[in-house]
Length: 217
Ligand SMILES: [Mn+2]
Image 1 (tube, rainbow, N blue to C red):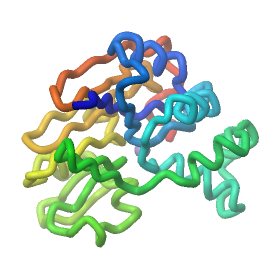
Image 2: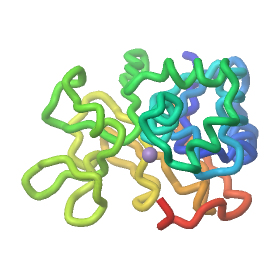
Image 3: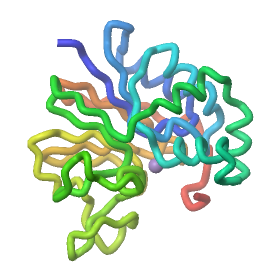
Image 4: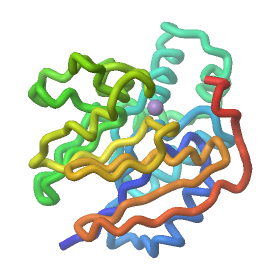
């Protein structure tokens, strides 16, 4: 079976992405899947998207990728994202334009989403803003973007499909029976993490520096 390497939130950390591909022993015979938030916060968003284009990587849309598309559409004016928007080529925009909210990889019995899935809701009815932003389920089972006052949504995901996701750098690596969270805060100076399927082998590399302070949005 084709090996597939899933990689957590890159956030413009293109050098670390290269480091991780090398450390993992990824080759062009393998498949590559990015769990969203390719862009923003880090030093080289355009470089990350360019690498994704060139390597034929699959990816899902993250909240920051979505925000960048909104900036281009004139729906948002966040200055950092506007700066990133000016750096992208037409081919790179086209790649971001086509990112799905989730990926279904039946041959691996796996789903990929940026932030989370509400366990009680069927896939086609999952609200977009939750797919892009949720982190927890509160005591009543309602989805929440917060990390306090609730449990990680993935700890309640019943399977049988395994879900690979990102977005929750505060909690870091999450390994639940039917879900793996891969955002280990590279852009905050921590690590960039990958997961090989079907073996479930983890690989990670350190950030080259702190690119952004965690509380700065
Ligand atoms: Mn995110």
